[in-house]
View (cartoon, rainbow, N blue to C red):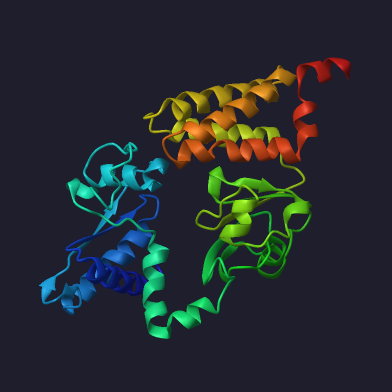
Length: 321
């Protein structure tokens, strides 16, 4: 959005021509004002040059800034927001391609998808297929953050391992820090301990590991991180961001946060850990969208890979010590 907005616009025009669309929207988070301003300037320049046309007819592209709701990253909640309503997930079917924005068939894709299209058409499918793995072609943009020497944005071919990315592009751990875990896929992503860093960054490998790549966010945590408090933080995030449409997410995230707060305060029990597992499986299977469905993953993987930290905070263990 900030570095090459014209590539995004070109990709949208190509897609619009392919499907017969008559209008385009770019939904941008309110927290990214520079991206929105850059894109609006690019649209203005392209419009002045009469480039925003299809078959001789204008193809208007509008930048819409959201109000900050995380759930509006879900395609149907995004459509609700575009229509001027609160971002609440819609039940499906119908899917957006059948009845989307204002009831019209609508294609909703990430800006990275649109921005990739011009390169593929320009260089050819064989070039694109030569990058990455057999099941995950091309490249992925990764956002490295947390306790690494060189946080930032990198684009790599699919197939590199997490360890390679952290060492080669992140420069390893920041001075004075020892690796503890890496979270991949944003605040709903799974946590990986050191033993899991050889996992290839590709969709099939992550699916087999029960994880998702999301949009490529990687946050590295060091030895000082309290994993119980981290799990509580992410469940509290879901409780705050839930649209409230479905019970598993609306109620489940609050109950999960309460259990983790109890464990963090030293009043938790072994039964609470079992309850978290049961609650997590229920949310994964029955939530209406990925917000509720993915919310248990950082919690359950934290318990799986760092069980001692959770057990040490249980009330019975504290009394024995």
